[in-house]
Structures are given as structure tokens and as C-alpha cells.
Image 1 (cartoon, rainbow, N blue to C red):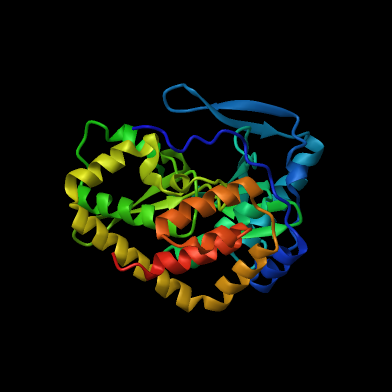
Image 2 (image 1 turned 120 degrees about the vertical axis):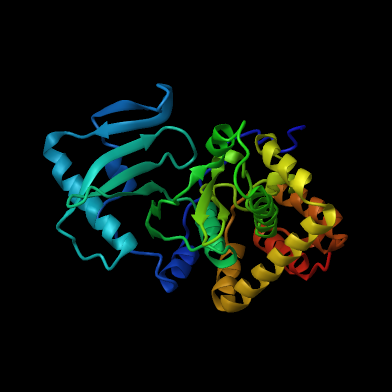
Length: 343
């Protein structure tokens, strides 16, 4: 498959301006955290983390000077409590590991939180706040079937861990094995592709989304969930917002082509558009607030706005895109037309 979606350069971080902070405060996303991203960057040592096959990953386990370690861990526990609960300190929680990734725009820290009574553990992430990523998280909350928890404080973003198997690992694991309920998986990929395109979430290559597996009473169910929102409404080419065009996803495309006729795939696309319309209707005030806020922001380049406007004008056969000068207006018009489609 030709890679129509090569992203030629690194996307810049966009600052969180006051109008976005006001929206986040209105919907309980803005909070005073007990630490900042910069606090975590002052580690004294970094030890590479290896996978089960002995291959080095892009993650490092980081250590801090002993004089700072206890206070850092205590602040991270408080941050976790704010993310998942009321913020009230729970005595039996501890920090098992602090990990740092040198790859990606937000260069995240992954925090391993452990219940010291039963050894059960959870993760959450601390990242540099980026406006386009925050818009992506909010749109995920509004238009996907899943909820996502995150908090913002100045230049720091805290995100929950999305449970699932990275799709590239899932593909490699089952390359020579026929997974159970392949039809459900193919159906979910078609719906996932539709969700990403409708809300213009880009760069959904297999390592940027996970497979969530649920045992139903009579079968296995699958859900594909994005874990990277950096390319929300940034790139110019239409195909960047359609996972079906990435060479990393070719196995999923082949599965859908094998099991689904064009007519059935179109039915699943229509079903997903109806579901997105219903989610919009139930969150209309918040969605309008978000789009109005986004309109005041610069989260892409003028060139990308122009290219995407041309692509979507051809896609929808609607020349009104030519007069749109920001990504928020393009997203609003695209959503309107996409959700009205009957085929």
C-alpha cells in the first residue's frame, strides 16, 4: 500500500491560551496540580526499559536525588487521586515506578501507581500541555463511545491510562493465528475509521491506538481506542485523518475487505455517523463551546488549512470550504456534512 500519509515534519506544541483555559475550567478539566511537568524533568538517572524479548524500548525508568524522591512520589500520588477521584489521599497507594519516553511531541512520563495492600497497579501520564492534543481529548469525550479523564494546569497535562493492547503488538501477536470473532473486529475497524475521519483525528497508525477486548456473555467484543491525540486538526491532507490509508494498518484493511461487502461496510459507517450525531445532541452545549473556543486558536498552519479545505471541498462537493480560514470552521462544516450523509 502506498503511504499517502507520510508526515514530513514534527508538529509544534501549541500553547494553552486563556480562552481554552476558560472552557476547561467550565467543564472541570482545569485544576491546580501539586507538581508540574518541569518538576519531573529534573531526574538524576535514566535506566533503559527492555521488552520481553530483550529489545530496548523508547522508555526509561528515571530516578531522582534521594532528598527529592519522597516529595515527588507524594505529589504524584495526590495528582493520581485528583485524576481518578476526589483528591483525598489514600494511605495504601504508592509510586512503584516513574518512566520517561524520549519520543513524541509531549515527551510523556508514565507513572505506575500501586495498591500496597493487594499489589494491584494502574498507570497515568504526565505530559507537556499542547492545545491541539487537548482539543483531541475533548473531542474524544464528546464524539466517541468512550470517556477519557484528563486534567490541565498551566503547561502540564495529566491523562488517564487507556487500557488495551497497542494495535501493532496485537497484529504481530496474531499474525499467524485466526482471532476469535474476526467479523466483530472488522466491523470495529470500519467504525473506528469513520470516527477518526468525522472528528479529524490524524496519525492513527497501528501504534497510536489500542485494542480493548471484552468477553461478552456469548462472544468476544473489540473496541479500538486512540491513545495519541497530537494530530487533531493539524495536517492538511484528508487521507491523514483516515486510518484505512496507513500502511501500518494494512492487515486491518485486508480483514475488512475479506469479511465485509461494500454494502455492509457502508451500513456500519452510517450506524457510526448516527451514533456520533446522538452524542453531539446529548453534549451540544459543551461541543459548541469547544468549537467556539477552537475558533480563537491557532492549531495548524495556514498552508495546512488551505490544503485540507481543498480536499474536503472535493470530498463533500461543497465549495464553501474555500472561504474557511481556520481548522475549527473546517471541522464544524465537515462534521455537519459528514453527519448528514445518507450513504
